[in-house]
Amino acid sequence: MTVPAYVVGICMGFIYAAFLVCIIGTLAKLGRYIRAPTHLRWELYPVPHEKAYFAVRDEIPMLRGSFAQFYHGGLAEELKEMLPEMLFLVRVFRYRRRIWFFSLAMHDGIYLILAWFVLLLIDAITRLAGIPVYAFSPNPWGAFIAWLTIITGIVGGFAIAVGTVGLFIFRLADRGMREYATFREYFNLAFIFTVVITALVAVCTYVWNYMCANGFTFKNLVDALFGNHQGVFYEAMMQMLALITFDPSKLAGLTFVTSPLMLAHQILFCLFLLYYPFSKMVHGPAKYVSYHLVNWDDKPHQEGPLHYNYWGIIKIKER
Figure (cartoon, helix red, strand yellow):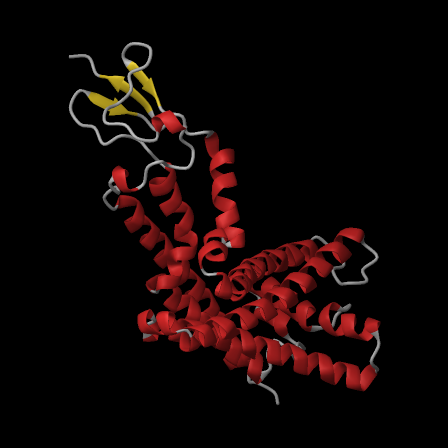
């Protein structure tokens, strides 16, 4: 079934608009978080980087006369404390181990799909530079990023699908979770699953039809995924190329990304981007902001003769 060219053009315009709204909305939400009143410290101490003797204090410890230095450990130590929680969901593993696998699959699957989008952009730029990009490319760089694109796309997509289904079932089956779960949480999981499953079904259908026509070999499987001028990820790269060059003519002759199911997937994905900044799911990019300004930051709440700069140096103002 051939989709009219104007439908493809409208879909591309929708993609531009959805990404723009998603970026602006997310930045606006992060700005609100940053400007929000600071949390009270006594519920948070000790913060992760503090030594035991600084864990609880009633007044600012004065060091070297009129200066006090609070040790923040640097960005490296902050990331070392924060990244395990973001990547491996340590607290979920510790306190809700039954749902840890599915939660990990969904979150890390999302990270992989974000990496996949970045790789598609790198693929497109590499192709603009004249380097052939596909799985069996004679150029090592072209072959390397093509294989990374295949792995992150496939693993990320299936991980999200498994994770969302598992979390949805656990919310229904577990009495404690069911009592606190809201319709919005079920809707969010179902929405993410619908966006992902449409793409996975389209990919699997294309690969199956290609291998039925050309033979069930490993090379044909890889060619169906990211071959030379063919394959689902090749066409995804060409769509990215069309988007960054504002040239929809580059979509001419592509049968996968312009198929009805893939266009439906792209519309659903755009609707998800429009919905994302105004949903609870925006906690993802907000996690660093909240962690940095709440769990890690310990600049004192002090007015009057004291002030502090960005680095946490406390200095008594001259009277």
